[in-house]
Length: 395
Image (tube, rainbow, N blue to C red; front, side, top):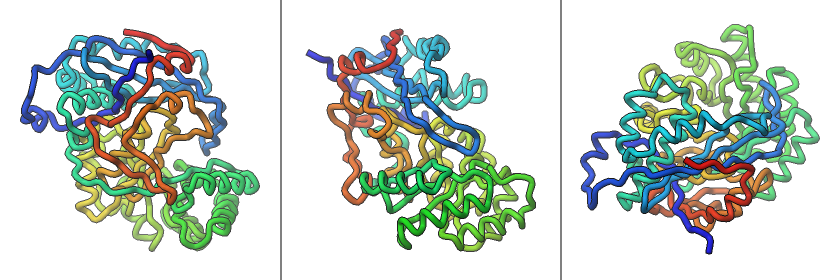
């Protein structure tokens, strides 16, 4: 009989708030972990380069009674990646209670580690906490909302014909209300892509362009001219158009009229941006998996943004496994404008085929819904996952 384990992807709640929660039992220590590597063979084009394959690392932390999961991309274009450092990081929390491990991360590793391993561990730890407290992890974070959220389909094609093929893929998945288009830093060619997409999807779709900071060596007015022309061509929002200081973001938003600027990079990592982000830098703010870092600081910052009148969106790191449903639940908890973190069966089913039950689903209109459950409410057949994974390591 295959083992049936509980999957979540935790969130960092404030230590004081968690300490105040009533305990029904002594919090158990983490006794071990498994790391599952899934190699995804799917080409993804960005303004900064091309991914020909990517290596997703699922983490399963265990107490005697519960399991907590998370997902991160360990490498790109490196199928034989050395995972020893990731295994060593997981080993550092074995023997600690989940709360002790979270406190240790905040005290010792914020700023010393990059955001990826912090986020990787925190999600799994808060998965455990949610199970132990019989509470949704999103509620442990302090997020009170539960709204259905439109899924955001991402298109990463520089050729108009291939772009149109991706539009058909989006239609097949009922994901055409919100679409992100990767832009490549050539304003005229980018505008051709925008017009092609707008003509294909019609006037109602919300279109976001993402140049990944690809417009360079211009003045703010020159950037504003580019973005205003993009808006006239059909773009509703633009994520990270150029390398800007925070005050320049504020000024540029004032120059581009109705186009919504979408800061992403200025939010990375949240333990820094919670001290530096300014009101008015954009109309929508993107919390991006892999680069968010502290989940508690993310929530603090998100509430502040909403207090300014800004909106939240949840980005993606091409997630194909444990991370997708957790980030979707965070989107529902924020009442986000959209979530890009979606399962991708067209790219990999190695993890998805092992899921027995999950707390989120996407309806026929492309909206993500969440049914709250302890932790992140996902059950996984780990015996099946051991067979479908490229590699498995234990701690």
